[in-house]
Structures are given as C-alpha cells and as structure tokens.
Image 1 (cartoon, rainbow, N blue to C red):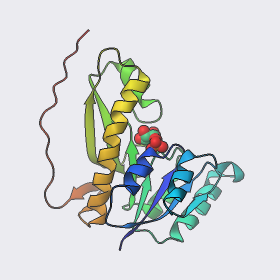
Image 2: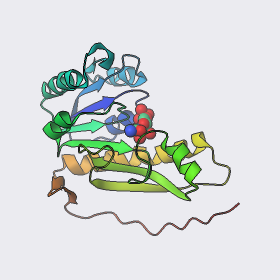
Image 3: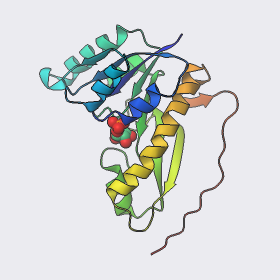
Image 4: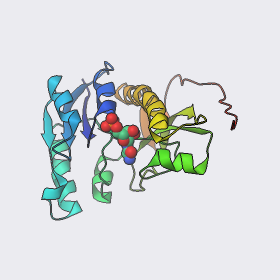
Length: 211
Ligand code: GAR
C-alpha cells in the first residue's frame, strides 16, 4: 500500500478532506510547523501519528528544511501533500521531494500567487476565481498545474464568502488529485504534469459581471 505524509500549519480542513476520502494509501503522518495547528488534534483523533517541528526553533531555513525532510523520510512516503502549509520550502527540500510533492493553492494559478489570494482576486475584479493543485518546484506557487476548480465571484462577496466558496472546491479537488497519484496515474514528466487514463472534463463557465 502506498504511503503519504501531510504537512499543515493550521486549521487542517484540507487535511481532513484527504483523510476522509478513502484514498488508496495510508497516511503515515501529519506534520505541522506550528504547535498550535488545530489540524494536529483532528489527525490524532483519527489515529494518525502527528509531529510538530516548530520552525522558530531553527537558526536557518536550511536547518528547518533538513529536519523536516528527515522527519518525512522516516515514514518513507510515496507522496507528500502540502495542505495549508504556510512555510516557504527551500530549493534543496523541494528538489529532494520533486515529483512526489503536491500543493493546493487558493487561486487559479498563475494568477494570485502568495498570500491573501481572495483579497487579491476581489481587488483585481475577476469574475472567476478558484483553486489549483500543482507539483511543487522551486518557483513559489509556480510548479506544473495538475488540476483546477473554478467558482464565480458574486456581487457583494467579501473575502470570507469567497474563501468559503473556494474552500468547498478545494475539499473536492485535492483528494481527487491525490487519488490519481496514489493510483499511479499521475506523474511529473519532462517538467509537466501527466495524467494517464480518463480525465474528467467540465463545461465552460461563463460568469457575467453584474453590478
Ligand atoms: C487553504 O485554503 C489552502 O488552499 C491555503 O491555506 C488554506 C488552509 O486551510 N493554502 C495556501 O495558501 C498555501 N499557500 P486548511 O488548513 O483548512 O486546509
């Protein structure tokens, strides 16, 4: 059975969507860089081994990355899933796990990398927003996109309303992509995401600008 490790920093709702999806693999551990991450208790309650590596206890980013890599490698995972993990990982770490390291980002990349993505989307006045799952490469939020889900931006939306609409799609999209990987259908080939077998196709999404 394939093994995966999930990295979190906070609430852990994406982590839960993965743990509760009946994926064809075993979650070997959930690791947080923040001791107060609410997701840790949720994982522990499901019998998943949890660990915290507080980044503030390390002198350099490289030291933290090395300790995190060692903690992950202990579990010999086939797949590492960043699920609301809010630390930038250095090139060495990313290269070590490249091809088996996925992230979910709350925007339709390459639009709105970084943080405060919903505020960025509202400020830009886009009519369509969403989330992306991508392979992690050294380019921040710039790795090959595997799948995206789009939602409309509605009149009167504030950050919280938009975030909630996107989050509901994150909870569907990430387990779907993780399943493809664990089934051996998804890989990083020549710098691009490749998915074998049938690919779900949606219709066009037309979202008018209504004042
Ligand atoms: C999610 O919206 C996730 O996409 C985002 O943080 C939130 C974590 O929520 N991740 C990033 O912004 C990564 N740069 P969760 O802890 O409930 O899954």
